[in-house]
Amino acid sequence: MISFIISQILGGIALILVCISYFFNKKTFLVFQILSNIFYGAGFVVSSALVTGINVFISTILVIISFVYEEKNKKVPLYYIFIFSVLYIAVGIIFFNDFWDIITIISSIIFTVAVTVENMLTVKYMMMAQNILLMIFGIFNGFYTSAVMDASEMFIIIVSIIEHHIKNIRQ
Image 1 (tube, rainbow, N blue to C red):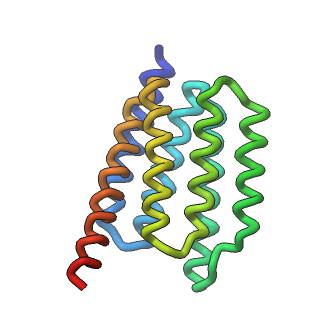
Image 2: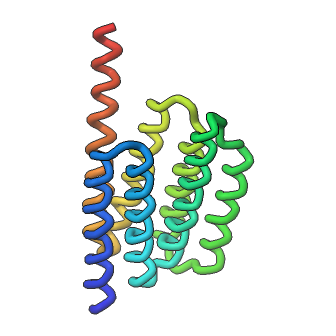
């Protein structure tokens, strides 16, 4: 029971950090996103959802790498898709617990591909798919604050997709 409470608190901290992150410049945004991911992943690890938690930490490393490439005005090399996908699958094999682990591995791979895609609209659709998978995982496995965070991000993504389409219609 205590791990459930700690998990919800960590997820709540992650949720607050994500919401705050959207009100800062890009560098501060990244810092808040990284901190959010650390709390988000820790919430899963505390409740023994090791595949999900560890893969969130691995994804955080990818975010840092992609930010470094972006700062240098370079594309993230496509071989990162392979490297990180292998890492997610290896974590899944080592710490496999149940069917839900497969869902979170797929979600992590979608995230990795999204990081390498240039078209932001495609990235948004991919991130929506990834968040849907994580939200379903969170709801069915008792990670409620994490599910709320995923739903919040989905809402933000949906709003940005609608905004994109409205801009295109006006042009």
